[in-house]
Image 1 (cartoon, one colour):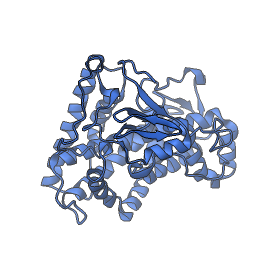
Image 2 (cartoon, one colour):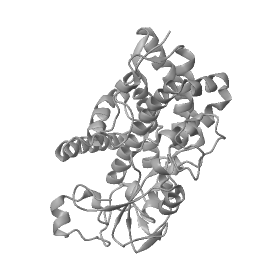
Image 3 (cartoon, helix red, strand yellow):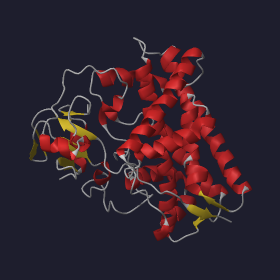
Image 4 (cartoon, one colour):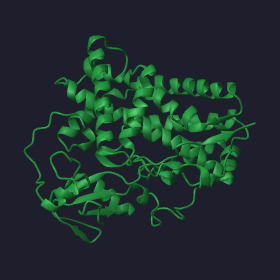
Length: 378
């Protein structure tokens, strides 16, 4: 498919083809060493002077844009920090944060913007707790993150916001080196499971920024969209409320049905590769469409229908697949489970206060969702 810059990419949409592509080592995640057609300016496309740089030495920590063995090293360090003890403690904190936020909504009346008052706040509290980010700094983070993810902003605006985010995390890393706490960032610096050799400040800053964005933006939008979807499908909400044991299956179905990533991961072909009977030449850019794969009718009957009674199936790829599959997916599931259960239990009669067609959708953002969700209850 053609891009606005004059280049072209290959779009992979079928469920099995997506699974094959996303785990194929001939398709590289390393967009630093390899030219990504989506990042080129029209002038660069016309000039054709953007060769790959296979010998470039990387000193950053952007593990989501790395291949093994660099990706393996950083992923191993991160995975070691998702300990059973830490996840249990966070589970308890999710319950506490959820209770506090819903209580605050109730104390303010019987109406709220569920995005501002709940969906944005809960993941922000959780990810700040995980990384040891002072919660009073969350507003700055949210503002900068939103600017970098809004595709309508200019490259200059996105660059400036990105620089501010990196400085924010650099200051936090410096503080954790001076006074480590009981958080993931401190654990990667000085805990029993710290990296060997130690991670550099540059690596820690990149990892921290990546986790902040991944752990906040995606879950926040899944929370708001899940409520929106259930309110728009009252028969599905009724089925869930009549049988609370459906909650885990419902969450998997919502993850599949909503798929908040607009497209999915980008890869670059390191050699000629044939997928689904089509040959993709070496050097070409591939976009792997997770939302489309999650609606593949050869994998799910009536995939365009939301059905919380589907047999629980974690075969969807809302969290990706393979070596780059989301590390925090279980934490995201906890936030969704607790958030949805408590919202519909403690806010009886929860409903939209405007027609569904008037809900502002985040079609201008990298991560899909709603900009606001005005609701009432009681």
